[in-house]
Image (cartoon, rainbow, N blue to C red):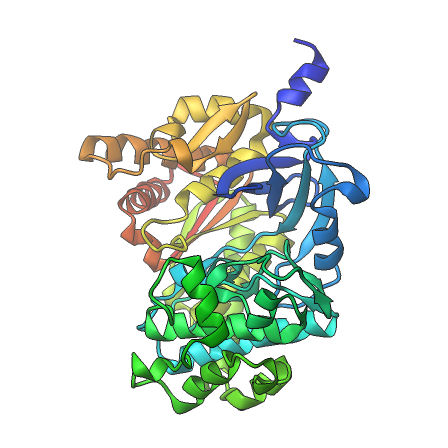
Length: 468
């Protein structure tokens, strides 16, 4: 096989983006999680199914031109627009490189009909701040729905909120063709159906329907008929969530009712006006200043990193250090980075059903480049983790992975192999492995950590700092 043919078959898209996992599929394309080997960061790749046009004719060109104008903490960042040259995508396939958000669509991250008014009001504030930025840029999103609002994991309260997917966005004031609907039918504003000029109030209407669903646990119309939905948007009853859920705060219920007004002049005039209806957000928790570490705790972490640089393995009890646990972990990560060491956090996944053990192992495999095949084979990493090899490089795709629980014998063998791989990787380059308590609910992660602790206690390892 020629060198050019091998390059074309490589899973590294254009020699730079290593496609790791298929995150979603739609009628026009797929979204992958990928690793940018140049900037050394995780990204999302949105790629079309087929090659369709070049330059300004590329279907993603208009989306990127719109998306790249936006810079806001509650909006997913669009980094680049490219066309595939080599790698797993067909040559000429357009793709967007996006900020990767570790989260889930809002209807999966939250439990519709059971969240508190306080949490839903905070969610509304964050989405409204994002929409305010979009609308001030002269853009209408036009496809606000649950799948396009991402919420990150959080142990308490609401995680990070990000608005995504500007594939249907348009300039404010543009009129559509009457009868031609773009967007998800339950969330389209009446003026969109009638072909009137659309402004930011159409997004506010969609937000009102979304908040109704999250508040009440059901949409304001129980039907899958597009015709019935269109009639409801034009002349249906007032969308009052208190008919379904009486414990909602009057402020939230009034906001939803105003946002879903059929006449757009009856809605808030813009996102800022809607924010005023929710009032000023409450003060931050009084525990926030506790993030500052005591000098003794900071010194203990620094000494632990220095010992690791000298090749000494150790176990560090983070709970014994005074200070907020997040601040302690953050200080340890910063200390490892400044010393040129690898720092990984073993946490739970977004869904909470397993740990992030696979992500930790995969990141270390990506660092090993040509040695990845040997490591996967010697330690049997593919037996319990969704890891395979393509052209000698590790690829992660959950579609072919068997998620069933491991039997006792399998758990022992798999944990032995994964622990062995981590210890070997640490000998090549010192590793700080921070273990969050919630990760130990995963039997495989707990078994691996137990083996690592035994290896450290028996001084059979070097170059690893296990922080728990």
